[in-house]
Length: 424
Image (tube, rainbow, N blue to C red; front, side):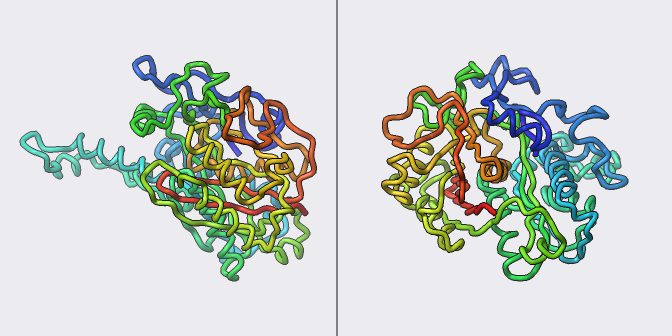
């Protein structure tokens, strides 16, 4: 796990439950001419050029012959997270069948098009829009130069590093991408097509283009104060803060894990997904579609709503998303939600919105909440929106047993993914 609070779950989790803030003024580029001034950047992974030898994504975790500077920051984050998850799983010591071990990654492939456009601009003919092929070929671009232009390496590079030869896939469903990747891997294992899957995702799009894209959609906060820019469920929220980060989990067949004596952290019991394609950015007006995704996850798990004690909310800090998610939670949990018997929190107040890395970050948080009996807070929440009648764990972590949790991802384009987790 990697994000603006550091590297590794053992470092990030204590800082998360302590309410520490990973949002800061943008340092990756000069943002003086932008209305958006803050983001949640991953430390020591700045720039698209040389990276430090001791950075989070150094050459040590890339296959032989792969130049780390030709792998996008987001892909490097997922590679490092995958290596961390694999090391903690004990698979290397206990052994596994590489033909039945795969990778499922959520990744923002769309930003590859920006680099392709730059290539096109660089090599266009002076007398028109066609590409000057002679000049392009004369430059003798090395093959690895194009690794930055493709998205499949978010899954293929971790597979090469770990020696996995089983299923591989990359999901690009905006903010739900890593949720869909986890759900697809869950179904592969249920169908008997794999024993082990590294699952998750990452993103690193804090850049002039990234800020411009999301600003055009009216999604980003213009609050320049890092301590209050991202405040999910607060009545003063004005948009989300763009974040970098991601994570990975080892998803494993139950019998396979038990047979090798693995430490099982939690059970992924169910997965639900649906679509609300009203337009590019808006959720359903009444939360019914989002509620249905949550109910599908519960049905997939054979889990009654009464068993769920915690919802790791999508909670972006946008006006519509937070209010609609609250409506959906009320529809699923009814009086228990209104009575504060289902705790709800969003870590995007501290970590920003990591887009394709958001769902796996929420999933790790939910697992840690079940393991520790400590529910992470919704930071910067000082005045709950009048339309959100929930216990959103304001500002301080809460001691509470968590038997089961839902992990929500409600993305642009209407892509909804919900994971149902059960304590073990």
